[in-house]
Amino acid sequence: MAGYWGAQPPRRMEQTIAEAEALGVDSFWTAESYGSDALTPLAWWGAKTNRIALGTSVCQISARTPTALAMAAQTIDHLSGGRLILGIGASGPQVVEGWYGRPYPRPLERTREYVAIMRAVWERTEPVTFAGKHYQLPYPGGTGLGKPLKSIVHPLRRDIPVYLGAEGPKNVALAAEIADGWTPLWFSPKSDEFYRTALSEGFARDGARRTAEDFEIANVCWLSEDDDVDRAAARLKPVVALYAGGMGAQGANFHNDVFARMGWGEVCAEIQRLYLGGRADLATQAVPTAMVEDVALVGPVDKICEDIVNRWKPTCLTTVILGGWPKPESRERILEAVRS
Image (tube, rainbow, N blue to C red; front, side, top):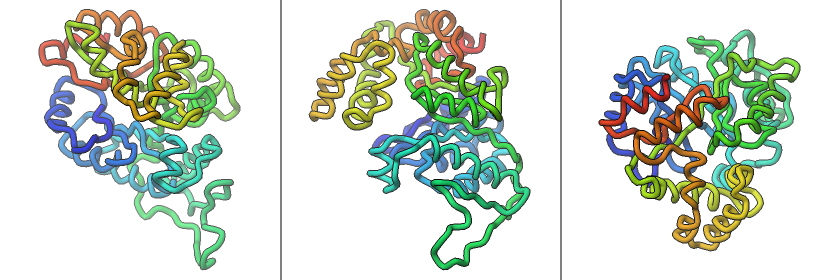
């Protein structure tokens, strides 16, 4: 997972991806929030690879119209020889309305329409028209000169895989119904049954695109390797505090909800109170090591490998996206634990 950038681009990413491809890693992933975008780094770094799949986790749907993202996706898919995995997500109200200047309400409806339009572009059977609540093609106003259009480009694949980034049960069910895969965020093995239930609801709906047998679940699992578990967890506590405390407003933080469902409700309330009060340092200190261990691989290599095999592998996940590159001396052991 290359993720999204901080203040500057990450260092050595080209070398890291080259090492990953040489070791047989299946895919690498980018992301976006409100700084770097997901598509440009994917294309730039992906141009220096030959086999590894190129995934976005996720492209925010409010950042682009459905046809614009469909165009970008089919372009990268052509240039990479059919290696794109297009992960999309609704993001949250603070980013959607504050950064993109778009309305946030009814994100599931918007996602459903968005995916339908992208697939119509790639199928390229006829000029694209759409009359939804949130998207209309052609635009029903303006000059009145808009006309249905069909992509000039013939897509390399008419069925580019679409994964939905989702955390709440309704959105997870939607992923199982209309998408080819699901990308959780802050998945915990202890929540496996909760998510299996939501997925089952989606698979059971009329017209569901996939079944549990051919549906992909690719989760970002943070990794921090250190002989001392507390020291390893401490490196990830600022990230957990940011998402549980600062990524969203009071009562509208979906990441906070995920941790609360794991049993960390009172802790999350305190983390959020501190973070929104301008005390990110104290919010970070309020994150227990056990809370990090619920959602990440932390500690010495033996513990990490044992956790992968005994805790993570029995879950519904089909792909582990490592949010951290193992140390050179541990790399093959950890990758083998994931593969086994």
